[in-house]
Image 1 (cartoon, rainbow, N blue to C red):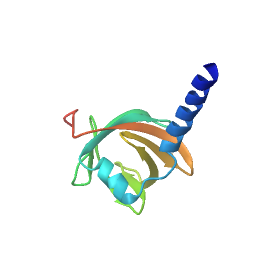
Image 2: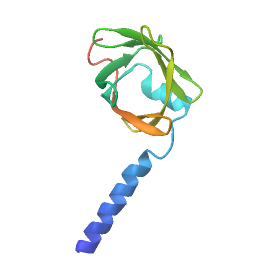
Image 3: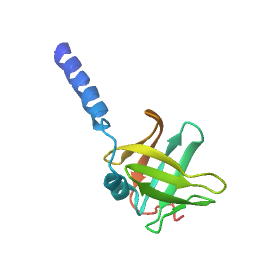
Length: 117
């Protein structure tokens, strides 16, 4: 019985890690982000919550920025900073933000604009 539980645990871990095995395509990123909110945590800046308007405007609690999908990357331009593009791994409502092959942030995709940004 312990062997069965152990085997099921290993299978679950492998299945979860394989859910994030592939980078999202540009279409996949657009479908997941456009008109929705993503909230999560970035290694460099901490917690975030942002609504991605269909007009290409990012709405945060007390700021706005621009967003776009270019090729198979998600790009942002925040006030006073150059464009910065990242890959994304998306599985269901979960996203991992990837830069130079490393996961440097995570988030949960929420439908619409629940924070009313």
